[in-house]
Structure formats: structure tokens, C-alpha cells
Amino acid sequence: MAKHVKFSSRMRAVFAPLMAVALISYFSYHFVNGNRGLLAYRDLRVAIAQAELIKADTDAERTTLERRVSLLRPESLDLDLVEERARIILDLASPGDIVLFNNTL
Image (cartoon, rainbow, N blue to C red; front, top):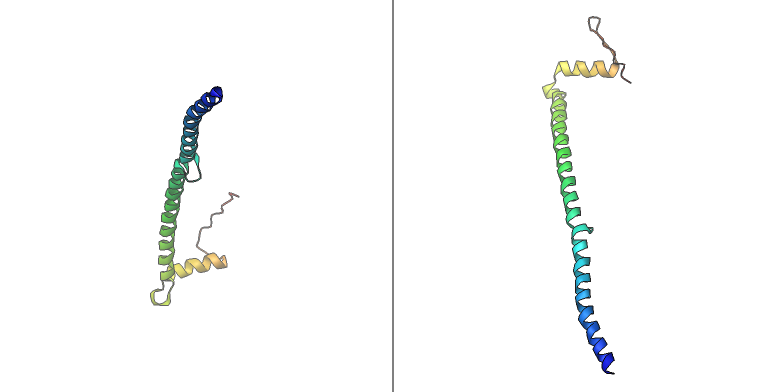
């Protein structure tokens, strides 16, 4: 019986630190590599930076398009822009125009 008590107390003395190390290891691993860990946070920050760059480009393009659309409104009609759009849409050219063909297909 004394051997059993001695073995049981040894097991407790070994088991508790092993469980503590196992738990610390588990949580440390998931703190770094988990779905919401440090590496995921870094990847998310990179994705946010890329999205902000795309948004800035899109905002600049939108501003340009809004300016061009405002030039086509009746109260501020730009005849050169109307002529340019008509030539592009109707595929027309004036007799004095120089036409360059782009063969980069």
C-alpha cells in the first residue's frame, strides 16, 4: 500500500507541471498561429493597407470621371468633349485627322 501512495504522489508531482507546460504550449501556439493570432493580425493589416491603396486609386478615378461628367451637363457643356465622345462612339474621323492603328492584340 505504501508503494501505491508513493507512486500516486510522484504521478501528481509529474502530472501537474506537464499539464501546465502542455496548456502553456497550446495557448502560445494558438496565440501566434491561430485564426486570430499574431500572424493572422499581420496578414489582416497587410490586406487593409492594400485595400486602402485600391480605395485611393478608385477615389481618384471617380473624381476624374465626375469632372468629365460635369463637363457633359447642359449647363456646362464642353463642345470638345462632346465631339470626342461622338467620334469614339460613332467611330468617325474628320478628313484632316491622322489615324494610328494599334495592333497590340
